[in-house]
Length: 494
Image 1 (cartoon, rainbow, N blue to C red):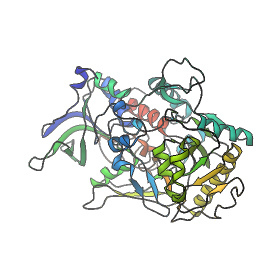
Image 2: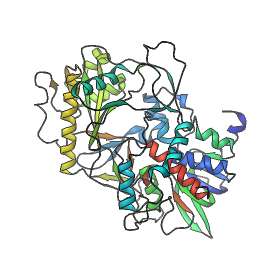
Image 3: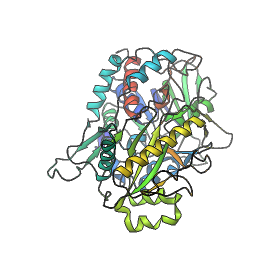
Image 4: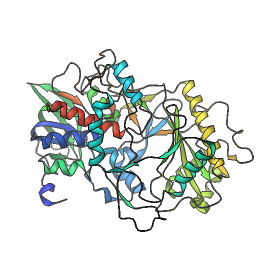
């Protein structure tokens, strides 16, 4: 980053700061909002709880990345039976700095559902199209210019053999010039620190990293933000920020948590949704993984929106973690990790979750309940994913069920239980949303169609919590397009 842009990063803040517009959270929603408002000439301060680190500060999908850029090192849990481990980015750029970068536009049937049930205005495909197209250019959404990783191709080949719909998903990625068409292409994820954050700084936006906003309150026609900065010692008060307008963009967990801590609770944190995901580690007779394989790009959508399949990061560290459910076979990672890869079945559930703040605790209590029907859908997804992987040549499968069965070509899927055990099934997700749904239906919506919190002046939400229900696809494309639409509406430019 150039020195002129670096000067916009506040590393040692005074006790009081003043701005026209404060944006709390710098993930895709917050970064786009701050960028567009700053480029319109507004006085913007972007506040981030985590550090400001370059994308290259650590190896992608490594332990160092988890320590540097994940909240709680990635060990956050939605309580329930079964529990669901979820991941949040905690750094400038948020989730865009740590995710796989797979991109979808919001499905048309989902937009129709949101318009009908939540009364969201200006949400036709034609309304969102210019925002999708512009964001796709801004973050360079594209397909692989060469060969896909072998583990990804295994998923695709198994699906095609069964006659199921499978395709490469585009990514926000900028690839190096490709010379060897037989090699997996190299490139750089176009995260927020590569795209909208530099643009925001260039337009005059200031960034305050390492700062946690504890409370907000409306006083004297201004918003006051009570915050703690990492440099603040016990002998010094925290940082108080005054703003005319306030955008909360902390994500589907932290946004409702901040609002509820501040006494703003109507339809806030009552309707959390996610994409619960169950994993399988597959062992093949040939090599399918390597240290430079990159991110798998194929997904199987034959059974969408109920569930879909994909291939996950399969480094030795991730494989070792996945095999904790099968301790007797963990040695396979040491001997044969290049012949192993992790796959998943991701579902669109009917269950809901809540977010509540507990006195004396820094993090909120997140609870999420899967229905019996959700568990049966996950089991069906696991069965069909097992069929696909055996069709692709896998010899052994290890599902993410503690002390669960090891599946082989001989036993196939017969060893899977008739019902997934609630206390032993290990689920995870990287997709959370719907905790502050948007729309004009005030019985269920926390904010209006353009993100303004119902009943409050100059207070807005711009992140994944706006999405009314689980979209059934990777959500960042939806978040970016809606954030752009809402920012332009705020500026009177729609």
